[in-house]
Image (tube, rainbow, N blue to C red):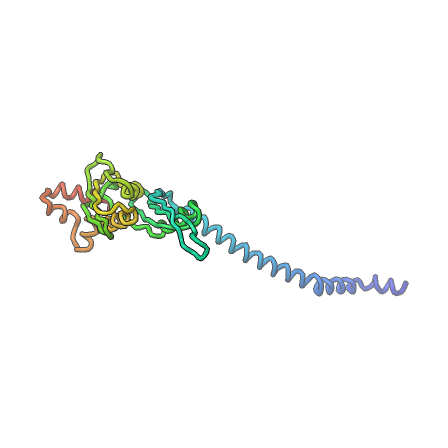
Length: 238
């Protein structure tokens, strides 16, 4: 009884023991819990950051126009015989003046197309367009045995182009253009020649900025009046 009274009379002892147990047992557990929560928080934070980054990429992602230009069956000679696969040529554009092309090879057609599409998205370039519908001036492109001529056209002309070149202008967003291809009909060379011709396109705004002049001054050299040149200069977007 005396021992029990002593135990009851010293309530602090069990509390200290319990506290010691909490300090020795639960304390590290809490520490581990906080550390674990911190680690989980960090992992969760990284996951949330990745989610935010992914959402930002999705927001910045644009709806692209994908055109399958050509698909070819290819083979590779190996020790045991021939290994067959597929090669795809794809043109990608946003319909607002940006386009690119790419090609890919794989054992299956869908995988080859996906590889070519990814390559085309990485190689997209911006082409200045007049009024968002046609080219600013004529151009020539040459690659291998392929020669391509592109010309601007008035509204309502449409896309006068065939084969691979039509896919380029449709994905680029050009509504009026006249083209002519000479030499080879190889789609790879035609696409490369077309992009070479488009790469030489310049807008009056970029030329004026490079020469340190005003756009209206450049347009007046064609014989236009001051009012007409000023109106045309204000109408130019790129």
